[in-house]
Length: 609
Image (cartoon, rainbow, N blue to C red):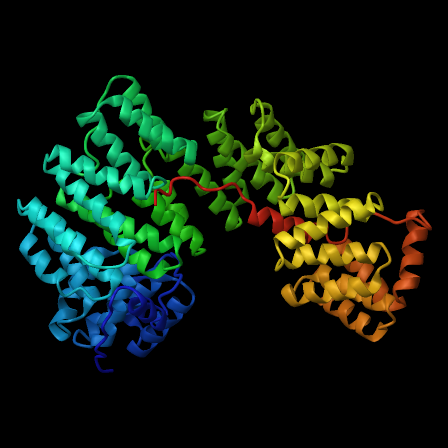
């Protein structure tokens, strides 16, 4: 293998390179034993490394590449693959060693230069840092990153003003402005330039009042240089926009106790970590997960004490479906952190996502026991119980949260909605209907509530016109949601409008081709418009998609004897001949409700942006 000269410029190019190398969405696993790898043939280790990457097993891939690099120390391609894998895994010290070897082969390898620049800042070698950062890539993200990191290195060299001047000289897109004001303000604050630092931090706050780190930096400055009232007002304004942040609650408690707050950043390494955190968090929210991962791993290595770095990296892993990595990071949040409760809640949700349900429930019950008034923790416990079909227990948990509300407002609609779904599943329809109506009263345009209540009415044969109107409204709000469109098609079916039912159910199947219930519904509609061959085809497809056992029995009966005879058999068995029936779990309810639940989980906290 020969070395391929790659220009890993942060931004589109680095994303393309990481993707090309298969380094997307890896997941943590135990590495294979070193002696096993050493005994394996090099070709086998290479194939095993590639397979490990394909299976998202970063630890195993890193172990195989380490051995290959040991055997072929001058092979540039292997060096690069190992380097990128180690960065993704967070093994930064090893990545630094490979970066040094890579730049001897390719002096313009931009990602290696970035890593060496960050390492130099950590080692307080500020001139060396700037030398590497100047060669760390071009493009909007890379140039902003390099400029801000270099400015912090100039602060480390005792040249804070020169760093701010370099920041101000940077030309670029409009979104640069917030980053420039924020870091210029932080550098000046760390250097003790009181008035000007406040002006720059205030300018950053005006541009971005919803970003916690910006709010925190300005409020801290205000507590020392203006007055505590301004600091309190700054935090309280943020709390109105983003209620319940634990860091804000802690800061307010200190201020109201008469304390002042130190600067957000006081060292070059912490400032550089703040650069990597801010850009990495922004990239992660905007779909640039691979580059965000590199920045956040480097930032955490630089300053592991940064309170939001671990939480944000864990949240990124969670969004990338790297649940085991997320679990490990959430568990690593120290007990002293204001985000510990949030971290434990998220750890539990990730445990549940990988099937460790009992552990998830144990964690959440412990959290709730220690935070009996914390609505987020209580709701998370209810969500995990509900997701595991423990509906009666979940309803009790939601009731506890509702009882603590006082006067509910629009944001509380989910509690009533989720409790209502639990009541419906436990055959307490009067209670379910009351909760669903309450949820709708609190938030009239919630498509999930409109769909659930409308479908339930239609399926019971009551309030047919109002139910259909609700489902139409849900579809208008979510026109590409296959479950909602299925509900609309089923509403037409249950009211005898079979041509309209076929039209909508065909749309639903296009959007959700692998949903058994939707295919089953379309088969029923085809039968009613005398397209019986197509009906049996859809029922057969629905059967092969592994529906619930009671649904499977109904589908197999229709395949065997047709819809008309199947309905007569079922009607006679249920003793409800001539009536519109409602099965224990209405035909489309289970998958629709599962989709609603996943899309409406309680929002996460802790991402300071």
